Length: 92
Image 1 (cartoon, one colour):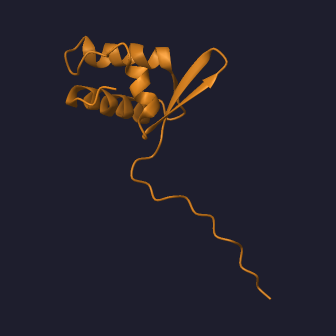
Image 2 (cartoon, rainbow, N blue to C red):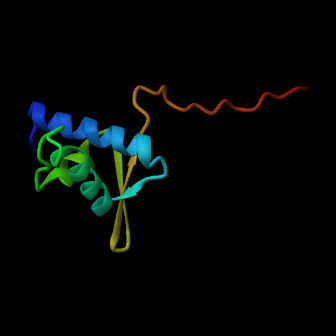
């Protein structure tokens, strides 16, 4: 996989797009379309490589879920402490 600064910028821009506009997740095709409209065509970000989804799948800040023919992308919260469930206290 590409570990260049350019691919890192793509991942960061994707993260911000999803977090800001699609808090409940977004379809892969729609995300690519919005990225291209928001960044590529305006010259505000690098071109989206053909294998961008492969990079998103392995990046820890994203979760890609396939539901039948639909692939959805979600963000995971960055720098969040692990979720720990405390056992209930016995008040005897």
